[in-house]
Image 1 (cartoon, rainbow, N blue to C red):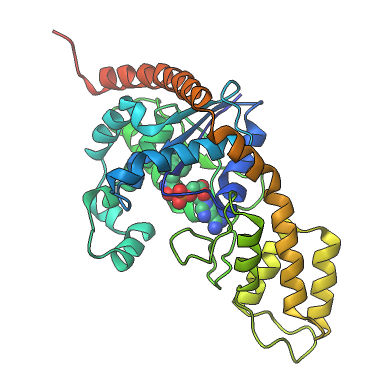
Image 2: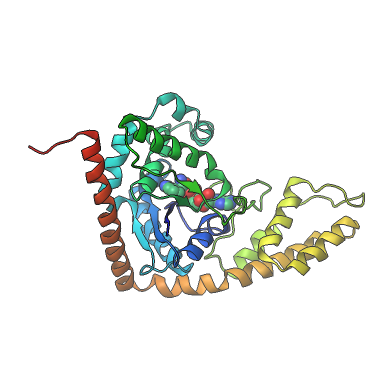
Length: 331
Ligand code: TYM
């Protein structure tokens, strides 16, 4: 049995990228491993520092985790800020994280470009907090999407460096996990290679979207004038629609439209209509569950309480061992 740890930032509703990149694998693993899944609300402060949004965003992600099939009895489901041991480990790991390596991190460089009015130290040390999140439970498997590959590499660096510095074999190395398959990157509807909630309002299909919203978004998805030469390469935006179809529609449906494309007979309108209906069908069960769970405050409170207790039990064991390794002693 391995220890599985992963999380999602609480910056709004969950989209299909979050689901296929991280959640789906976690849901599949929860009955076979020791699993921790959390809501990264501290991480959300690096980009979304508005107090009035914080609680509702955390609540929404919690509801959507549960609606996606996370079982709070089988796995440990918790909120990052409820486990102060993680922040202590974050502080300790920061002492052995170098500015140079943090500045070279791709996600930090991206943030410098896109959020240059607020380049805070939390963004710089973002991968250190991620490492603390995982190694506080001695996690070895981390279900994430392709965009997190470099962060996983940094987790291994910090875990190994701790072991080397204190001459111990304490933290195991965490690895990204997707059942032996390549890590996934779900594309956006707006031509971008990664579905994301922040890129544009129409890039992402959310698990909670109503059918009419999905139809509108999909019909607006970017395509082109259509192929003119048989079997020609697909431009990025068109490739995106096909890739979405690959995860949402049947093999036959995908093959049907691929053949039409290759014969230059494709009508994108027809393809998008089909994709929208398949997306509606796929998200249907989530939509219903989200509504059902969302109104049940008592249940949510219970879930958070159980999760906090289980997560703190695991985290406090690690932190007291870490303190001892580093040399903190009681008087
Ligand atoms: P976040 O909130 O950006 O994304 C959460 C998870 O969803 C995956 N993901 C995608 N996968 C495939 N295609 C997409 N278009 C797509 N968009 C998002 C991400 O890869 C991620 O797995 N830093 C993390 C949260 C975090 C974390 C951790 C994850 C904090 N601590 C420790 C793992 C372990 C993040 O920002 O994810």
